[in-house]
Length: 304
Image (cartoon, rainbow, N blue to C red; front, side, top):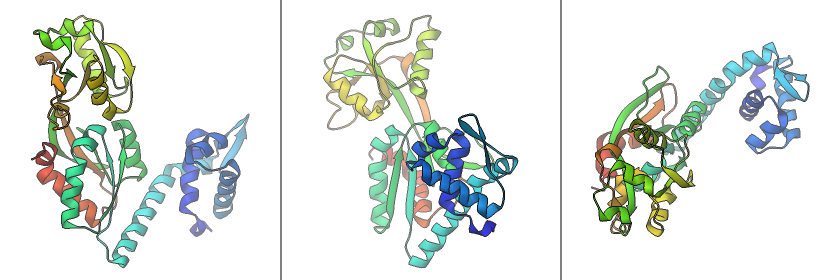
């Protein structure tokens, strides 16, 4: 009866196995708890064995459930990839692109990249997920996106990656900020408050290590936000400092409002990669976009 497995049931099973609680899993996948209970019953009927057992107020996997949990994601992703590939070939379309991208690249790279792709393949459809590295990696592993644009990726057997471009993150202030009236030193930056990303974000970790390495306390963070694209607007309207891509000072609509606080020790050079699962399906459109990234990514990001 295993041929009766439903892909949606496998996705919901993954959430239940991960959380160990039907209610929490239901919140995670935006379904009702009875719907997930039905999912478990269908899977158990198809496989002919219990997958969970109750423990207090929660549930835990049985031995059979553990075995399915090890394979559920790869089974589901492989099946979904196969359905997509056959559907696109049958429909005679060049495909759909599902891409995960960091906020900075979403701001500066995605618009010209999409324009370049649509000029060559106007029938392509595109869906983007904008998030930080850890979330993007989870989406890639789960098969929710075809590829991601992320900071330098560690090579692995499961994921193929290629460098796309390099960028520099710097300290940025509004053009009227008093820090720009003098030649600033690192310790001078501590006289002002900051807007920064959460501590889980790489740029935040890097700038704090700079101060720590100099024997100084970290920046005084007045506003912490995971909406990275909001930070330049906040800077233009306040006397806060931030740490983000130098590209924000190049924009025609904002460059005259934002200035870099030039300090060698607060200049972070970083590399961005494109990465995808080696065993995942890439539509013709996804392959085309990856080729654009590898051949023109640097120029597109720079606005050339």
